[in-house]
Image (cartoon, rainbow, N blue to C red):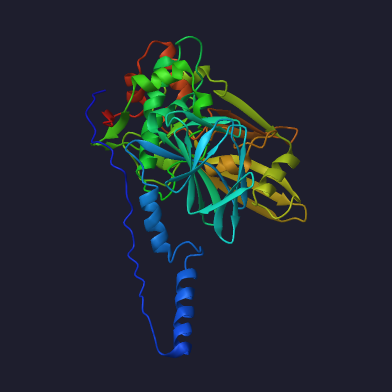
Amino acid sequence: MRSHQFPQFQSFQLISFKSQLKKSSVVFGHVLFFAALYILVLTLSGCGGSKRFTSDESYRKYYEKEFKTEINTIRVLLDENPSKIILSLQSSVYLFRENRKIIKVNGGSSLECYIENDELNIRYGRQNFTGKYFQLIPLNGEGVIRFNGKSFKGSVKIVLENAAIKIINFVDLENYLKGVIAEEMPLGENDENYEALKAFAIVARTYAFNKMDEGKLLYDIFPDTRDQVYGGKDAEYSLSSKAVDETRGMILTYDAEPAVVYYHSTCGGKTAAVENVFPVKPLPYLQSIRDGDGPYCKISPRFKWEETFTESSFIKKLYNAKLIDSEDYEVNEVFVESRFPSGRVNELKIILDNRSGGRKEIILYGNDIRTKIRTAEKDLALWSTLFDVYMNSYEQVIINGKGYGHGVGLCQWGAIGQSREGIGYEKILELYFHGTEIGRIND
């Protein structure tokens, strides 16, 4: 896989809307003066749902400036709450109101962040502060902030948006990745998974890079399965950090642009085409491919699986998914109506008989099947859509399947299987993202 230099990342800025406030002074007797003053007060306080700004436009303009980041800094939304957040600090920090240092907060203390009169407040002991936003910065500027049992590099900003308090970690992209890799990938023994870790580091960096370029106002990325699981400094391990360091700045590109990337646990032998899973246009490097002859991901604990549902529990799954309005049904038949070329189910048809004599037909499509059916015991999303289904003589619904996840892009256990066979990270990426190249973000 060839490598080329990728243009330096520039902080994405939204185009701000222009707003104007017309100011006028009227001096025509006491009555007109106070009437004008009253109108002016209403104008300044009645817009945008917040008393701090005169309009939504000025709100956005202010935070576009204040929350603009340095090159290669990512903003991670650590927590949010519509009323109150308690931060238990295990390390000492400086508390800033906007960009002004106001107090040192000692380790072992707590900060109460709350909303009052549509304004953001922070209480520290007997002291209370009100501001547009606050920052927590390590004493030496390069340390970590430890709160609520976790450690985070960089700084933390606390802001009020859409009637909710948000806690946002501003952290260098490479340090962010060090807090992601071990949360998302098995490290293995010694260096058996190392080439897979490097491949995944490049994919995770590409994903984060694309999120940074979306231009969100206050934060770029979630710290959980909505994006990538981020554990902060506590999730760092020497092997995974080494994989980040050795691939520093590398991302996948296609036609000199950052590639769209996805990854999943286990493909079950064949990956899925992106357009068969997500509502996006086809991409030449995200089509269905074989995961080697083995396949490589056969070592996964979810390479093969089986889910068994009693008739009543299967009906309950359908009811909980709001596909039927009562549980007064019996399962007549469940079968696969059609499949995608990868073998994954495109249409699943379920025929039910109502106890009063009626009949109902349900058709589920693609990845939606996983969220509607769910697993028998733990009520998780069904492991994958690569399965066969039938009813046995006990009127149980049996689903035999392969793989774990949506199946698009990098197969994590497939990458691990290749790493254990001595295949390098470039070849791993070439298999799952055929036609892409490795570019580099300049620091």
